[in-house]
Image (cartoon, rainbow, N blue to C red):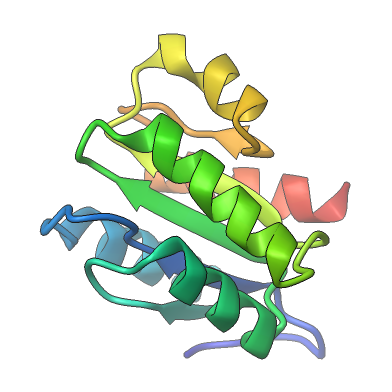
Length: 135
């Protein structure tokens, strides 16, 4: 973990579901760490309940889901429900990965605070996290 300042933004990057590809998630982790954020990575194939428990235990500001499987809508709903069950209602839920632009609004309806579509650059990810945490 890398941090700067007295209270760096704490981000949990998670891979829910059965998706076995995590290079993009690791690149996002590196970009956020390079920007001075504290980043935790859950690894592959995490259940929504496991993600929510880690978010609660680590008191994160942001839960970032990386989903490449095409199941981003149901997985977002399940993670949002699990976060609520663990009383993690103050952490922002951001979803990225293989997300068509047309699904961004639907992801927000499913509980995401922000959806980052396919093609979002690392600089845009960093700025989006900073912007959303300030709100």
